[in-house]
Image (cartoon, rainbow, N blue to C red; front, side, top):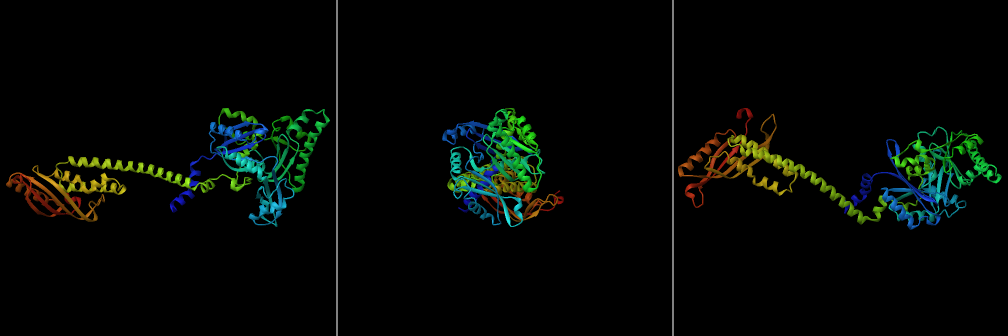
Length: 545
């Protein structure tokens, strides 16, 4: 059980290694669900796919919409993507707050008490998160960015994504999405505080960043619909007032930040619904003392994967938030309650039995693949050794000492193979019976003699040849048994020839006949058995020669 538990705990790391990491974000509005999928490559991000599923207000987060999203994800190979959606509109609060210095784990609870009267919902039931700003490192206070999301909205988002083929890991915020763009941008001048105006249909969000972190934010209830209309209808006083109000509020917000922080700002970047209108940008610049620019991430660090996606490059200012959300980090400000977030670790804890089965299955599959490779290498070595043995069998006129050396080396190779795979019965049998010794030594016996058994016992090792350092037994005992056919005198002469030939070998000492007797077979008058024993010793190669 300990092994299985360890395997389960390690399983998320295995999954994270074998799964491809993409960056996917979803923005759900009253008119559409937009899915942006990016992949990092060579310091830039490739737009893999962009889905725009149109819907009506009554369709929002309904099961039918989940089915449409699933179908689109399947068609675009987005199944099982880790995604976060954007918290927008009512039910969301983003604020910069200064609080007394305290421990990090106390910040969220403290913020709930300080904001309980100003929040438009029950903040104690809401999902609240906060991040520290760099200015918090010294002094007696903390500067934090607080985010809060109505509990009901967070639950609706979570329930909706449970019906999809996507893995819901977080609910991001507009400041985090814009901060992610700033971190990746190579065109935006970040030496000074960077203001970004996000002009949506109903409102304008003003965000000012310093060192890629939000330091000021404000919402103005004048959006694309009123601004564009009043810009086009200059003769209508009531409509024109909306334009003037918007311009005045824009300038007032920037002036407030400059006076409070005593810092100059750089260019102001426009994104959103009306930022694509060049003449609007010119008029805002003319009526204020600031320089407004339209920001298009496709001119900066985004590339379309293929020609079919290049059409979105013209809509870059509208897609800026989609892109920022996709590449933002859920470890910053995440408004999805922790118990609702998808993670491998959470999934495993809830499905430990299934995870154990999957982990063991993966381990077995890996082991089986490794065994196949290992068996293949053993088979190659075995085939090579068998080929060498076949060559030895053809050598009929080889001195016993030379043949014995070659056979010992062949035996060691097979024993080495056997140590690598002791489960192979075929190899084990060859090591035990050793038929190659029977056949090979029998080849050097006279024609009327046959070998029945051969045994070599050994202890310790020495080097047979110094230059090749081939290991060999230090002391060995050779025992051979065989039979001889023929007349009595012929059998005796043959036996004496075998003893004389073995005794003359410089590799054998103390050759003696252990026993000889007629065989117990029917034709025993023409056949006899014998047993010969001898000590095997080696001398340097020069003496052999």
